[in-house]
Length: 84
Image (tube, rainbow, N blue to C red; front, side):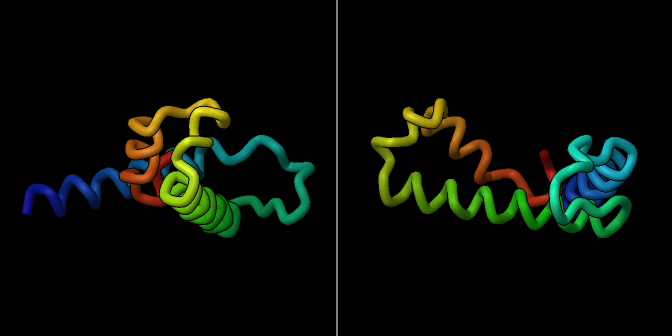
């Protein structure tokens, strides 16, 4: 029960944070303010983490070339999509 409440609390905090501090690059094509922007940012994070997982699995020797360690990759992949 405690873990579920922590997850819900973390989710709520992330939504509040992302809505208060949206992406600053409003010149990007496809930029949307508000809720649609929030959902768009979450989609980008999910796609980034999916691509990172694929690269870490298929070519782990190249992870250092993008400036990350495998521990940092594992930490990033462990985050839910709403966390920055």
